Image 1: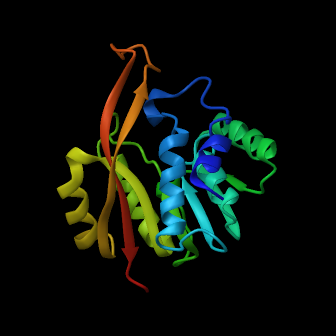
Image 2 (image 1 turned 90 degrees about the vertical axis):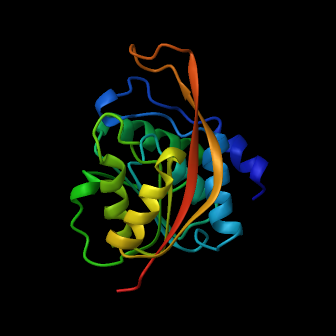
Image 3 (image 1 turned 180 degrees about the horizontal axis):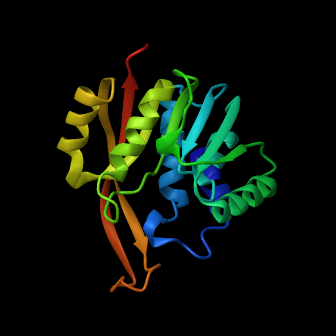
Length: 208
């Protein structure tokens, strides 16, 4: 599947109707989601025919992208039942098979590296300090091939240091820097939208 085709399909998905600020729910737009998954597959071979987990899947955009790129199995995890309802509708609309699980990914009790690849757009940790690192820690425990994750560029050195020192990463690489258009979703947002620099990371876990 070509990049433009993937982005077009993701562009038709439903997003949060009533986003929850405490969960830092922001939609992963089709531009970023398509490039994230397309790169994971075309540069590294980490999606097609692989078991892919989407941590904090929200409305399922990254999960859908993985399924459209012919992942063998896609698992979407999120704590919010309303988001999972929307994600299920999105999967049905695209006619792709995704297994959605309601749970707190930071408390997952999966034993060992049971998936090939984890993809995620975690909370940036602006509402709950350290939330981004909790997601990364959880992802690195279950992935055998790679973890793809978006983090604010301003946290780059902190992310790399923690991944290599604390989270069992063999390598931690910024694949590209992207602009994340954050729409005005919450009352405390002053501007219509804000442009945030984010890094797309690829972390390779040490094999247990």
